[in-house]
Image (cartoon, rainbow, N blue to C red; front, side, top):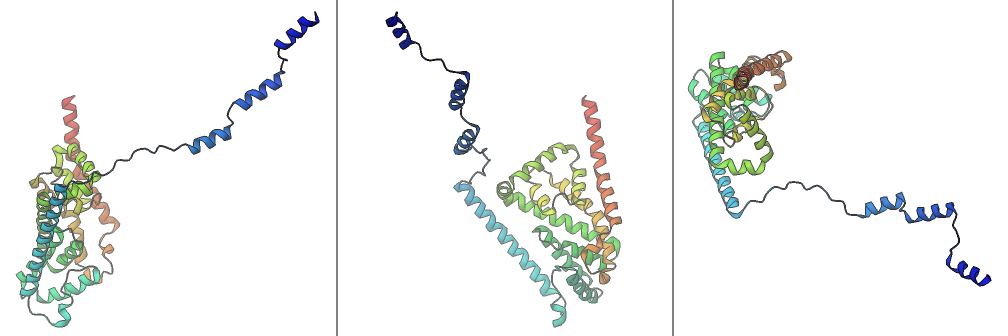
Length: 305
């Protein structure tokens, strides 16, 4: 009996209490702090971000060629500006220093005094000089056309000033459109791919009412004019719609600039040209320009349904 009990004692392990079993289970399970440390030690996978595709050798060569052409056209246009300066009436030393493209309202005031003095005797020379400068700024998207619009309002009567501003804006924007269509496609798609794709979606959405959409863009600062001029040929805006929409779309803002030109010598800043009333009227005109296109799209959807 003693031998049998001894054998049985060898094979039966001592019973563990419930507290001891729970302690062993807790030791086997990883602690929360250990889990956090293990997660921190693991390399985190970051979401892949789309990278801009590198241009091939042929594309880089074509891009360099495009830049050379743009620089050559810019130099040729700048030469034309100097030619206008050369054929201008003889000015004294104090007047010559003010014969430049205005960069602020003070420059516009001094230039207005000089041109107003020679406007009656050299009517077409003065007008031609301002037109060439305006088209030059619009063609190469150089800031300063606002001051020239105010200057035209100061020099000429309302109908002449309004026509000149609309004509110069449309001609300069058309030249910029043509320049972009010839040499700027690769540059625009490479440097502004996101904006170009967004604008392409808008064009497709308003394909049947692009003229109204162009009017709206010209009246509002949603997109800068230089980007509209450069991107329009890339995303498929027809030239005739672009030119006509620009000519008509810049008219309402030009009216405000012309009215400011009548009080140019009293102005201390270009911001005085735009009051809350004028901005409200401009906003109403911009919204009204979209109504025909919105109604057309609404009727088209009903007809398709």
